[in-house]
Image (cartoon, rainbow, N blue to C red; front, side, top):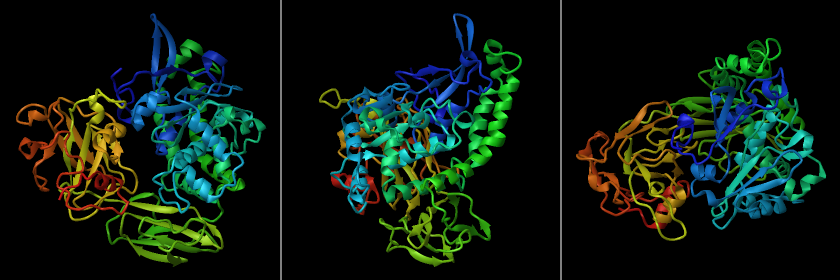
Length: 616
């Protein structure tokens, strides 16, 4: 199927899609007065709002042979096809493990169990020391990247997956129903280029007001010491032996629970309200098909919705924060309060011009000292010491905005607060950042073990045309291709960033790793590609075509569109400013680059240099 089922949220090509409806707490199956059609889909939406790929859904009325059967929803299935669509490669590159049902062991749906077994064995009865922990993350004992390491754990995905389960009180996922059985989860990993297992929320109908008030208790049943019952929760509990993992978990709690995070009361209510508004007009039809006039009616549905929006979600964050404190997963020591012109900065991503003053205050603690950095590093060193780059801020410090981020903690004895960080977002001038190369219609590879369709080799390149580093936090391609730059991403003066349709295909052809993967392929007949900054301003937009006056020799030949005039005031839509590339397959990372940064901060630059693709 080729259709954007999920709008700009997802891909627009599907080999398989699930069609499912409510079962637990439903009118049709259980005659339940608790029906909402909201709990499961909210839990998955929440994983997406927390910054991760998730299985997306849309509601539909379903008719079969002319008969109305009620409200259903589409859902992506987290299997090999999903992995290839969102992470790159091919479906057969992925190992996918899922729970097969209540009191049933896990099974492999794609690939093999080899890496999952290795992860299970390496964490069973382990000491929790830093060497072993960092090795699971593909890092050296000092926390630096290990080029020969094998990454089996994606800590950020795992933490947010478990935090979402704790927040929603979902008692039928991972180690379900008080740790009696594994249930309702998918996880996957690219076995050729492992970047850690990714866990996905699934089938969370027993959650929120229909779940458990406190879901944070450990799963102690002896069956979880056996591979067939291994799941994300048991992995989390094993990793929790490590101090660095617990600190990282606490940082994520603070990030999502406060300062505009995904699980703040306001944002949770807004997320659920979006789904409520989609369902509101459809519920009377569902009630007419399966309900009654009392306990299974639109009025009862609305009563359940009102309870979630007005009572459950407004109080949930504070309850879970205390539960996590009780389990030793969240400290009592609070991070610094940050202010500008006397007002509390209540965002993590904040628009601030260089030179703006920020005041840090240790006002929520009776003791402790502020330590902060402005260079992107953590003021807390691995092992709990004060970082050599950290600045002592005492009880109160005023700092001038510089760089791309400020990170601060409070330290009291050996205890540290969670991390408070502010990512600076700024207007990116139209003359500063340009789309510099578009490889929109190339050819496929029909020989060798790693063959991909032509569209998988496409790429797009941007260039910083200014003499200053540009902050890309919050910037995104919003039309043509879709890609959101990660937090703390930057592009140096005169530098390029390459994005690709499929990183594995790109690396096969060009010998280095692109900066990221976009979805929605470039149109072979031409289209408009738009890049916006974090404030929503258009930074650059190109409407290209495969017909004259645009260079026709790039259409299907393997050559790319390359800018011949990168002057900041040059019209991006003027075909006269574009040429066919001089070289077959284009020159990603090669045109107009005047210097190479090998500091390791820019993965693309380092890879380009290693591949010999930077030209003077």
